[in-house]
Length: 167
Image: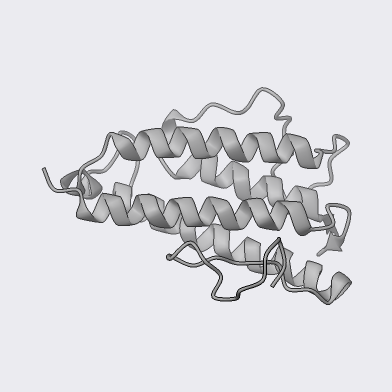
């Protein structure tokens, strides 16, 4: 069975998770963007990926989730820490990479049970969603620090020779 496309998706998903990890390590979680703290933007982004990358109809909320915690329209009493968000990111990464290991290229055309979109559309929608939020969050870091958080490409490198979390 062919897996050339799946291998490309795996590679790009690894890069995506690396870029989000860097973003999480460099951002100010208390910075307010559009009336919500950055930690809430991060959780919204992670929660969406967790719910929609595989099959939103077979999704189970994480144990720590509370109603509207992922909403960018409703304030929350609960606050998530950087460590909680990093742990959640790692759990999503493990779940998604294990899922991708079960797929073949042909399976990308399949529509998961209860969904309207095929697997490839679900995956691509989360790439779009992740990078939209990652760009917004990195912009707040740039505004506050005048430093550009490192963003790696498909090669696994940022294109710059500097080490660390910033370009």
